Amino acid sequence: MPPAQDPTSLLQEWSGGNSVAMNELVQVLYQQMHRIAAAQLQGERSLTLQPTQLVNEVYLRLVQIREMEWRDRNHFLAMFARIARRALVDEARRRRAGKRAGQAVTLSTQIPLPTVAQVDVLQIDALLERLATIDSVAARVVEMRVFSGLTLEDVATQLELSISTVSRKWRAAKAWLAEEMRTDLPDGA
Image (cartoon, rainbow, N blue to C red; front, side, top):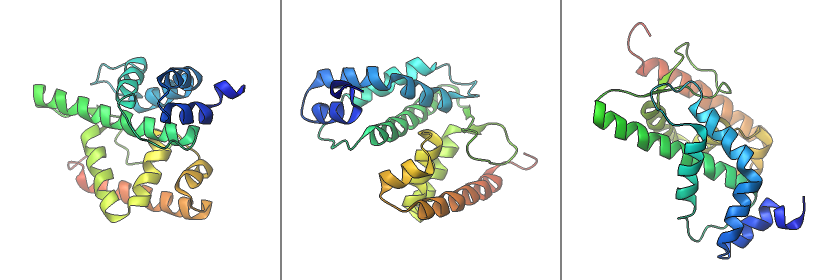
């Protein structure tokens, strides 16, 4: 990849105030951003957003970020996924306020959860917030694995932890989430 197209170089330029670098970065990483957005919307029937719309919404939120020291492509994509999750939660809350009904969203197939095919996006957000109070690292691992699609190795690099620690946190978080979802689900679900 030519230096001008290297995501890390573009991120550094953007951090330095070069807004053109952000546009170039989006062009370089658009496929991955679109894939993350599509994964977050997979199986979602109640929200009418398309992956391209979610990418655009996240882009608008990203350009407002000031004073961020971007490390590399994985750091950017992890932040992209986190902001996408926030955008979906905001959209679900907005719709819930208008319709007074829950919004269902399917989690990525990377995390085996109870047999319920769809889960309320607000419920997932609340569960991740609760998990963060118990184990913030485990919550970050879930966020990076499920919403960013990062590998255990990528997560370990981003969090500056060993792969075995990340793997242990991932297994523990999946077990905790599965148990909490069983507890939070209505009888018979």
